[in-house]
Image (cartoon, rainbow, N blue to C red; front, side, top):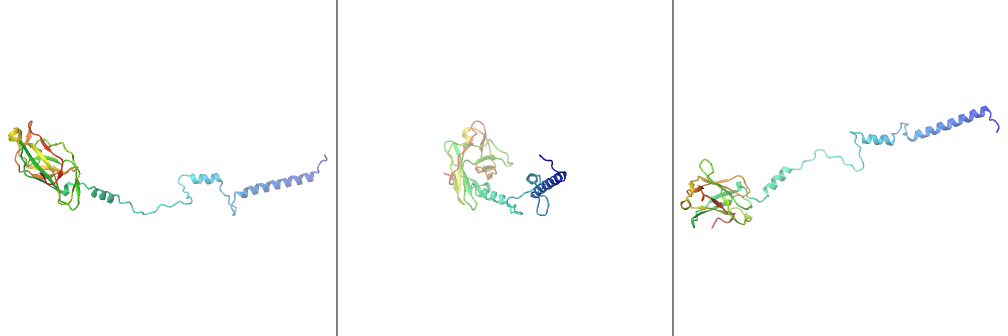
Length: 222
């Protein structure tokens, strides 16, 4: 092959360099904006999106509302408590009916009356305790007599009663005391109602000192 003259060889090398420079410039333009500012690469954009503290919105994102009114949970709880249906101590009046003696027993109806302006319910056994004038308990609390409690609906003014019974101290020989009051606690309540006790001595000690109370029934007693 004939040797290429030196001037032609330099010209060819120069042309190749210009072409290579043009290719590099074109590649650089693909990552540039129309103003000539380089665009961030895909990796750079990803890094910016995941950088702590950065926030990127996507189509469909909704900004949280500012100053939205909070849910009134307190009011809902109050409404729930009001609508629970149970008769509360503050809605009831307690009374002790006349003694019904029989077979050496002394039996008293303990009556709970709905004094509120709403209908409510009672279920189960009332609590009962004899106390003296200073509020000290006399004897053990009454035991629950066997029974089958039912839910009783009390419209305003209606009543339910439970039987309070004990052996006559004159017959049983139990140690006795004379209470100043009987504390009556409605079922599922904590606060008692105080009823003045006028029926004399009750057993508070000894083998025959037990007192019993029955489940509530509709009405004011036998």
